[in-house]
Length: 545
Ligand code: ATP
Ligand code: MG
Ligand code: MG
Image 1: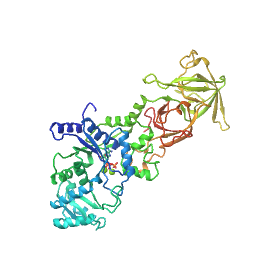
Image 2: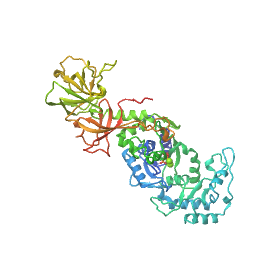
Image 3: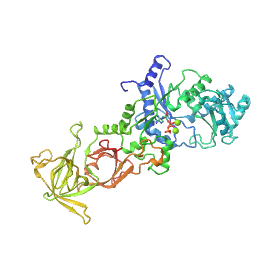
């Protein structure tokens, strides 16, 4: 737990001290209508985190009251995400649909109390009758129906005797309430649709405001934590539970600020558009702000947890800079991963005065990383360096190889350029160089001064890999829609070259490709024949705004 307690934890402590609850029970209640995103990660961290901190319990509940949008594949994705983040929901996943029979009974109870009625006006009238913030609304004539008539109609609604939209069940609260949400909110609507769990058992479905508070109650939830946009729904939450006179203790709703991150969109509906529109390869495309996307890209769960912890829990909405998330993953990987050499855009270098081959022993980690391990890097007459690491004339501040400036091959020898070979179009296609035998890294007695060390691979030993470089999915800080998509968010390099040690590592390993960034073997497309690496993040914040 962070040093400073957030307002939710303070509230939980206050309630425990006051003896309001014996046990803290929270829930994470997503609708299974899409893959969870980083905003959900925050909610997961809060709900499961608070339960852990106070030795309570957190339920995973699928809020599946909207049959047309929901699916088992989303249930699985939600479970995967919670599990991957390291949280435990116990024996079973809960579903709001499990409570449909119970919720129906509660609705009947409200009708019998004269607190709910079947309304039969159309949507347009309903909007009109609701009034405005300044103007009180008015009740529909159907609000005067007798309890018997309401019971009969509601049963017929349930039995499928009406079409979608013909009737609704509404709470009878107050059509002139200052909080518009209290103006006789809908409790049930007719929806002749197949539900992925209850199949065709039901053709009436409870609304969020009715189902949520009661599901919380039925699960013995103590603290029902949701995002700020539900602030006005809190009054209905309380009205339903209080009106039904349910036994105490009962849950109370508490709101916190939704997480927003720049350069992306964060609602399942908008993310679904990207998936359906083919702008991304799927929900787990490494550019998506989904947990599955981050996971596939190579983010660690620690980096996500750390991020959620760092941004804290606020009561006012704000936008978090994606650079902060990138900082968290960079910070985590810096301490953990082996450093290796990869050449993305190869330029051949022939070392004229070298014959045969040798292996150079090189540590995987720099001195400031307290980890051990090394590998052998093959060295031979023909190597590849990065095209960018050679320049024919010597620009100011350029520290790499030029015809007049030697450079060190990382972990290896110093080389000097002797000749530049070009094709008929004047493109540089090869460098002829000489190496300095007494300049080997760690035992250098050559006395030659170089200004930098560059990555390289031995041509006959290097393995060809595909590298996927990702940039932000949207070019706009606060994207409005698809028109703000960054057309260059993915760059694929088919023929990058990697030192052989990388290929022999177990698949779930992350690397720093020196001077390039952090990389992860794509868990889906990687194969021995065709290794594919995803760029997780660069070495420093290089995003040009
Ligand atoms: P979306 O619009 O992305 O679908 P939602 O709020 O409809 O979001 P749910 O599946 O209903 O998504 O949300 C499950 C839980 O996650 C809720 O308690 C919700 O408040 C929380 N949550 C969703 N998005 C965020 C976010 N951006 N930041 C923090 N919590 C979030
Ligand atoms: Mg929701
Ligand atoms: Mg939603």
